[in-house]
Image 1 (cartoon, rainbow, N blue to C red):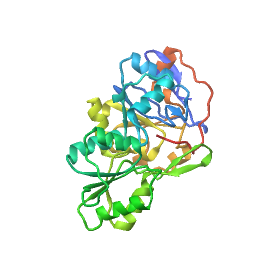
Image 2: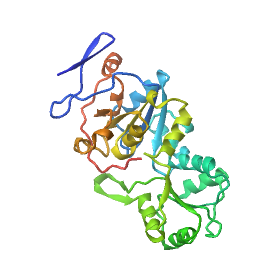
Image 3: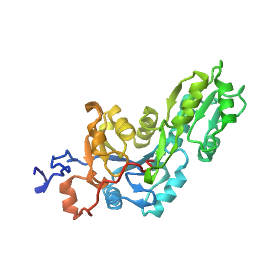
Image 4: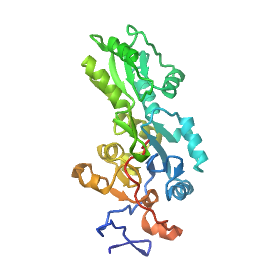
Length: 310
């Protein structure tokens, strides 16, 4: 077993089930970016180590931002949930696809009229930002497809009329194909709605505001005011959380408490591999530091694929 030595302490390096040592963080970052569901919490419960980790990051004045592709919640909803779980968080520390989409629209398409195929939090966010909306195809400049459990044929027709042989564009809050739930269930996500619109119009989606998009990353980095090499992105999905970090040349940590497992890592191209693979989220802190703090791991196993990952 290999060992890591920091500040004079020698502690064992973490190992995989087949006794192969993993690369774990040996440095402390200026900022920590976290996915939420499957990384910090699972459903309505905090995951092991999350509370002590976030408390430590606050005490050591590290920057923290929580990221989510879920467009059915607004910042206030996330703050309420995290507060109930015992986590201190300010609204500006939450960046989901609603926040990044609104910021992008105001920056790149000021004054343009949007048709949101979306649930109320996104519609309200557009209104609060002063972004004009309409369901009249003749007035629509941008069709905004999102996770919408009220999507129906009439909404598809409006999108079709706005895009068909007109100069309107199609954009999306996120391109997740489905939302996995515990027990193997799931619901179609925004990618299904985007696909329906693309299929009938022949128009392609030109912008995605969720992970792994540069739109979300730009929103986060503007919030932090830091460079990518100063930050660590931690999440449970290879194709959103890790992919965004890889594209930005930012270090990434994959936690095995949600969507991904070691088999999915093995199937991932070398260029898209995470910097670190962790059994639990508090392992983003170097092992020697955790040893100094007196942290111990409560025995836990990686959770099965099929969790809703925000």
